[in-house]
Image (cartoon, helix red, strand yellow):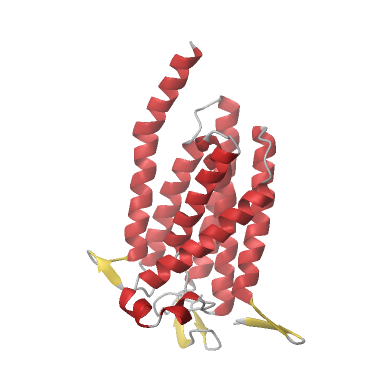
Length: 258
């Protein structure tokens, strides 16, 4: 593993580099989606702000998962280079996107549809940062041929374990490709906005829930990890929006058009 790159006097964490790369690639994808939706907005500024909000949210959610440790010694936990929770990042980034869509006067569901493929790709690339740094975000021991050890990782292990960051990298790229195709289909058939975002919530929720089965994480809610509980929330929210909110929104739009 390569937790750090040493360039002369500079020491760069590979996790941070991959997060920055993920944000940059996500910006290009979002800008392309804006073009096909004919939205006049700066994707690079939006991703930059939402990315920072997501990093802050991921950090806060992680440290507050163990409140006793946090309040006993908060500053080292807050400013550590490691320890970020996916669901906290989702909440932080999502809140920022809602605010940005309103400021840009873009319909919220249209905006979230455009952001969904970019978000999936950004997350996938960020997981390569977890893989390179060996930050403990791997799975349980396995005898499968693709099992890997992380002896030089930030959180080292000499056992062969599931390389769960690689699983997520592959699955999230597949989800991103599907969401991009779905966005084109929605646009071509003039379907209501919000469908792509609903699929994003459901598919990423399912993917994360399944990955958590082989990941080393403490169990809390009915034998589930915090991430699994959050994933169920994501799935349920996506289903509720798809089956209850979107039909009403479409009907309201038709009534307005008449």
